[in-house]
Image (tube, rainbow, N blue to C red; front, side):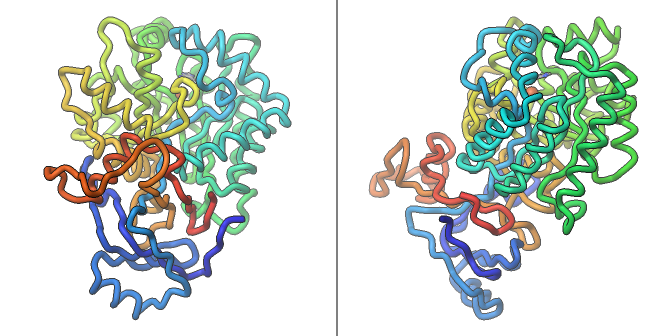
Length: 452
Ligand code: GUN
Ligand code: FE
């Protein structure tokens, strides 16, 4: 069984987090203390004197002492996951996007008409995400209302913070995986209500699971469906929007045949779907003006480099312009895009972002600090949840991972740390981002509660 803590406890030891809006700025604290009460961070100390004062003032009922080979980091945020696709993650890497959807995705998602099948799959996925240190995730379910609601229940039960919605598609679904416009809209309303009612004590940002509308992407949604979902998003201020934009050459071309001369951004915007509670996956081929529109609207991007590489490696390929978008004020987070990206780990997404940026000669490199920033505070901002999570600031929720540097896939040689490395903590952090996996995740907290 997992250890439980009293309502007011503290963690003492090394910690690492992003503490600024600028990508890549990471703070390293060698001797820190974080005091948690009822799931929220109520005090943070960053040196021995501050620790003494904070302990005297707040008197936590228990202090967890980290070993010198451990450090604490914020829980990671995965801004784009397709829950039903977890069934075939690690396979199906051989087709361009539009063929991949028809051949693999729609038949696999259709199976979630069977709620028991969906429950088994979704439980395994939620366990897997928590195990990887992901504490907040933007999830797509399928077109099915019962299975979407089951996904909500599983997140609540296992304590994974999430934005969850029913996928909507009223045209161009293959294998009969489609619904009518009316079914999509009524189903969406039913799921939004289910999510609200499933959390009777909570409202707004205090909910663990946030309700979301999901027009799958422009090719599978009629203008009537887009407009209807835009209306639903506008009606209440507790509704998120997720979709895909400018993802792959074959998809961009298809959008142009359906809406001649128009691009994804303009179409989403004109239907009320580009809001400050929206996160669009990919956005690789957005033009500069479209990035400006994202910034003006406060819309977020889920950067999903692994699936981009799998779907978009073709002449004219480039990576998501991370630094350009960030400099324009676009909110950028990281996404795995299970199963377009086959790995459930956001650390793997960080590594792919760094490598992809090195292939892309026109753009500034994304380094491990930029990527980790995007995987934590950046992701929280992209989801519009940065007042709630993303780093260790007083007032935010204690969503955190305890990292063991002496496990898993690599060895550390404290006596052999390179003289150029500023500190052992920076060394341990870089190694974790580049080589770490679930074996290094010793425990996981969401809302101050142990979940792993
Ligand atoms: N575009 C529309 N649907 C999907 C999907 O399921 N995965 C990815 N990667 N892109 C999409
Ligand atoms: Fe996707």
